[in-house]
Image (cartoon, rainbow, N blue to C red; front, top):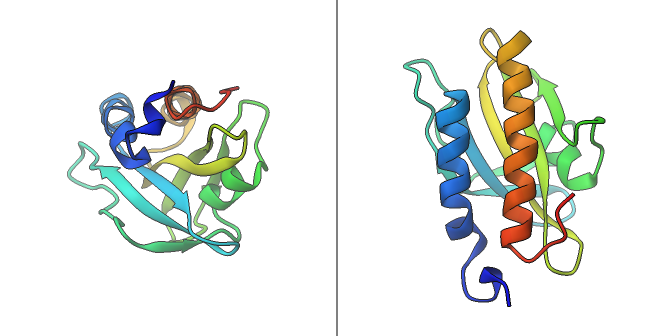
Length: 147
């Protein structure tokens, strides 16, 4: 029996998002699939920098041409993440990885979002690893198979 049977995904995601924000310094999000064209941000942990991406909690975001959209569609790079720069807003980079539910289907994605001037080089590499690891852990907590 998995926690997912009794705990909503946003609640399961709280420690995951906190660790991502602590590790990367950037804002972290859980997006859940709303329909075939959008996701909805259902949980967030703010970044630790003065200049940061501000909460989109409750906001619908297109799945088209976005990191979160690529993640939920399974269009991932070899390390299991999708990265998009300037997709939703100029100067913003997002790193996303899918969250897999108990039936083996993608139910959402975990993302780190921040300014492109900071999310590059070694910082981007750290964010990619952290997002992939934490999305995998959240998938397992939700009853999914993980990677």
